[in-house]
Image 1: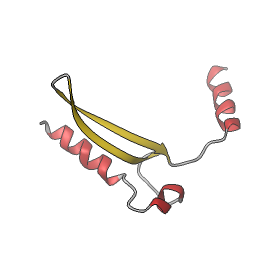
Image 2: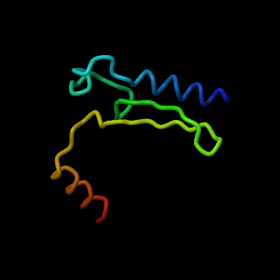
Image 3: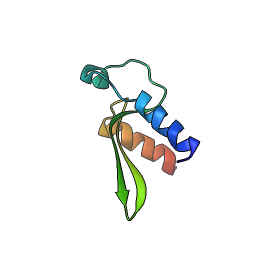
Length: 73
């Protein structure tokens, strides 16, 4: 296992919220998402890592439409 894989796992584990109130709260985080699940498994004989994340900031449909218009123009 490479050192970069260990570093990735360490970083992702640091983004796991220990308290479910923190997931919806607004404390500062070093990434635009929170990790809510990690799973390692063998897939076709290869080690794979599955990560479940949620955004830190909640978006409304209106926010997404306005961002899409800016990107497309």
